[in-house]
Structures are given as C-alpha cells and as structure tokens.
Image 1 (cartoon, rainbow, N blue to C red):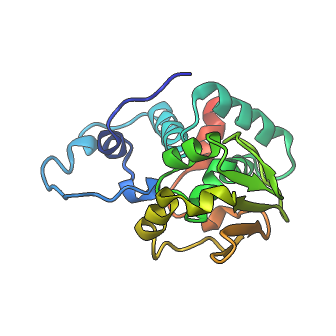
Image 2: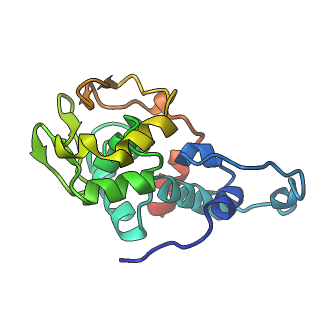
Length: 200
C-alpha cells in the first residue's frame, strides 16, 4: 500500500487547510510568505485538482479508492458531491475520529486496523467500513483499560461531536443517529469541483 510521507504541515499549507481539521495542533504560526500561493492565477483544472487533493488528504484516501467513492456517489440518488462527502464521513475510521477515540484520522485508521473497535458488538478491523444510521460503534472491552486510550481522552478533551453522533462516554460508544449532512462539515470544501473533474 502506498504511503504519503509528505510532512503534514507542508501539505496543509499547500492545500490551504488548517492542521486542526486533521486533529493536529499547530506549534507556531509564521507570517513569512503568507501570500506566496496567491501569486499565480490558478486555472479551472488547477482549482478542481486542488479540491480533490484536499478531500483525499483530509480523509486519508488514495486515488483508486477515492475514484471508487466517486462512482458510488454518482450512482446514488441526490447531489453527487454531497453523496461523496457522506460516503467519506461514514467511514469507520472517520467515525472513530469524530467520536473522540483518536487524535487524528490517521491514528483512527491504525487503531481500527488493530481491531480495537466494534460495530453493533462485532469486531471490525476495516477502516473503510461504512456505518449506517442506527449502528453503534464502540471500543472493545479489553481496549478500554489501555493507557493509550486514556491518553487520547486527555488529548481530545473538549472536542465538539457532530450532531449526527450520539456519544456515550460511560460506555465508550457512539450511536449513528442519522447520516451526516453537507453543512455539518468543519472545513471548507467545494465538492462540486471534484465531481466536475472526474466527469470530464
């Protein structure tokens, strides 16, 4: 499997997103070269490509899988761009991140892969697993005693949970109340540009 080893801060700067969107805290803020990315006029294709790269980077999805999500999104009823966002938001690794059981999506993907989480009581170790409304995502009983998750709980203290998740801190679980909506995202994205890019 391909691994993107580009520094997070460098990728965030290039794509114009805050590291906080990914769960990272920025150690320092610099005023140097703040407008360097605005010097050149970006073409329509360049804008579309940048939005695609931004979505792939935020959710940690590679090209082949991302294109597969696009194909599903265009086949489903409704607006294709919103369908694409919904597909990405309902990935198990993203849900684990959203419910505050991982500091970043990258960490969530690793924790899911190691089998720490269950869906409706059954162990699931596939980060791309799609949850549905009514599903309950929980931390395995054995994993609850791990110092790792105590550390994560301290690090994500104060994180705001999306309204489509009902998080129960006592049982260390979250119920999917409904599918996420486009206007509930915590970052700016022009998903229609991604659809336009693929539909050429």
